[in-house]
Image (tube, rainbow, N blue to C red):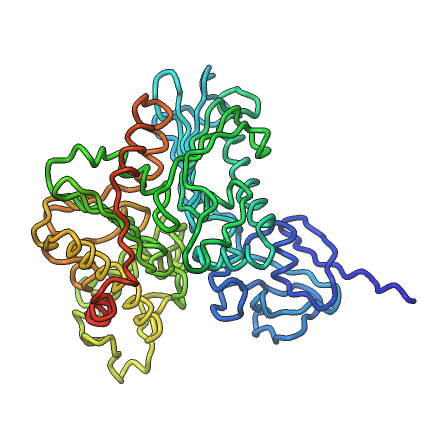
Length: 497
C-alpha cells in the first residue's frame, strides 16, 4: 500500500513548520502545535474570528477572500501551505512602574506569584514574600481561546477528550509567566510560592482534571476545596502551588478570593459584589447573610460573539463618544483600531440610543441598513445589539433576583463593588443608560479591577486569608437563577433598553 505523502503547514513569521493530515482543518493543526488564534465559537464556523492569511498553496472547503484571508476552522488541508496569522497570545498589559528595567532588577530572596486564570485572560503578579512589595504585573489572552470563548465551550471540548490539550495550553502559558518573573530577579527559573485563582472550570483544567461533570445538571465539580501541589506535580517552576477554594460549579475561587480581599463578612453596610464577565458572578451581603449566584452573560462583554469584537488588547476601541457632532473612538494603546472591546461596546450602545440609531427594543433605524459605522473597520450590526441585550439582561436580572431573594431593593443597597477587567474600564453612566446597571448605583459604585488577583496576592502574605475564605464558603447560600420564580419574566423585561 502506497504511503501518503506528508503534508506540510508552515508559518514563516513564527519560523514554524509542521506536518498536517490530509482533510483536517487548519485550526486543528494550529491547536496541536500550540499556536493560538481567536476562536470564540470553538471552531464551529460561526464567528469568523479565526482568520488567517494564505501565503502559499491552496486549501479546501472554503475560498479565501481577495486578500487571501480565510477562517482556519473551515479550511481543509489538501496540500503544502504557508500561512500568516495575527499575533498570538498577545500581551494585554505589562506593568513595571517603579521597578528596574528587565535584566537589571534587584535579586529578591523569596519570590511569590499570584495567578488569576480567567476564561479570557490570564493575569499574574509577582511579589517579594518578605516585604509584600509588588514587583510586576503581566496579563495575556488565555491561549485556550482556540477552544471557544466561554466555559461551556471549554467543558464541551473536555467532554470530547480534549482535557489534556486544554491543560497543556494553560500549563505552558503559566510556566512562561512564572519563568519570566523568576528570571527578572535572578532566581533561575523558580518561584517559592504561587497562589492560583479562577473560575471552577479553569481551575479543573489548570490541574488537568476533566470538568465534564459541570456540563449538565446537577453541575458537579470534582473539587471545590483548596488544593496544594508541588511544582513538579504540574511541571511548573514553583516550589509550592495553592489553588484557592471555590463555592460552587459556577461561583469559583475568583469570587471567594475577591470577597475575602474585601473582607466582605466584616462590612456593616448592604454590599453587592459583581464580577462582569462571560459568567457574571455576584454576591450580596445583607442582614448578616451572604448570597451568591452566577448568570450566563455570555462572552459579549469580552468582545466575543460581536462582529468586530476583540478582547482588551492594544488596538481595541474602549471609548466611544460624540464630540461636536462627530463620533470619536479611543483605543487601548492609542494605536489604529483593530476591533471593539466590552467597555467600548457599552459606550457605543449608549450613543446609539441617544442618537436614536436604535430604539428601546434594540431595533435599528432603517436608514442604516443594519450596520452602524463607528470608525475605520469597526461597526455594529443588529446581531451585535442583540448579543449585548442578552448579556446585559443576564446581569440585570441576576441583580434583581439576588436582591429579591434577600428582601432587598437594588435602590436600597449602600455599596456596589464591580470587579474584573471589563468593570475596570466601564463608563458607569453609559452602563446605566443601556440598563446594564440600575441608575441608583451611580455615586455608590466602586470599580475595583481584578479583585480575584488582588485576593490571590493577599493570600501569599496574609496569615488569616485562608480562614476568611473558609468563613465566606461556610456562610454562602447559592441562588440558582434558572429555577427562580420570575426569572424568565425578568430576563424578558430586562432585554429592553
